[in-house]
Length: 250
DNA sequence: ATGGCCTTTATCAAAGGA
Image 1 (cartoon, rainbow, N blue to C red):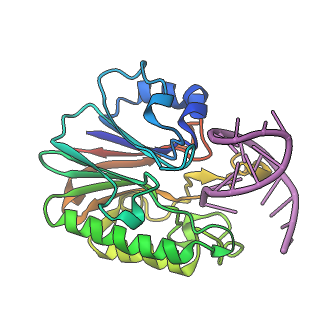
Image 2: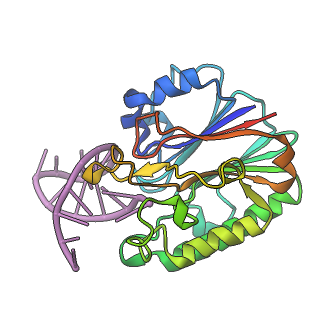
C-alpha cells in the first residue's frame, strides 16, 4: 500500500505546476493534501479517475483546508475532531478503513511573534488526545503538515529559529508528547541521521540552497512498525513550497 | 526588527504562511 501527503499551498495553483503529474504517476492508493485553499467545486478534478474524494474546506474562503483521495474503499469519513473550537478551518479528515484509521491534518501555524501559540498548544493537545483515542480502536496512519520541526536535525538553521513559529520549545514538546502517546515518526524510523526537508521558504532562494525544514510527517501507531516498508521525502517533486512525503506499507 | 516571496481575496492592498 502506497500513501502520500503533500501541503500543496493552493490546489488551483499547484495543479499545473506539478500536482497533476505527480498524482497520476505516483500510483498512490491514498493521497492526502493540506492547504488546498479552495472548496471542492473550485478545483477541477476531472483528470482524477478511480479515487473517491473527501474534502474539508475552511469557513474562510481561500484559507487552509484539506482533502483526501482514496482508491481503496473505506467505511466512513469524518471532518474535524468533533470539537467546535477547532473545526472551523478544515484542518482534519479521518477515514475509517476495515483495518486502520487514516488521519490527514494541517496543524495551525503559531504565527508571527508566536501570537497564535496559545491556540496552537490547545490544538496540539486536542489532536494528541484525538489520535490516542482512535489508536485504542484500530491502528492509525496519520499524516500531514504538523507545522513543527521536531529536533535540530530537522531544519537547516536551528539556532536562528529557536523562538520562531514551527521551532519554539512549546511546539517541539507538543510533537514529543504526540510521539510518546504511541506513534512512530516513520521517516526517522528508517533514517535516524539524514538531513532532509519538506518545506522551504519561497524567499531568498531557500529551496535551491536547501535551507529547509522537515515539518511534514507520516506517523503510525507503534503496532504498525513491523509493516513499514519505506518512508520517503520527495524534494524532487515541485508544485508547492512543500514537497510530498510518502509512506509504503507491506 | 525587517525583508525576502507566493497564493488568495476582492483587489489594485492585505492577510497568511513558518
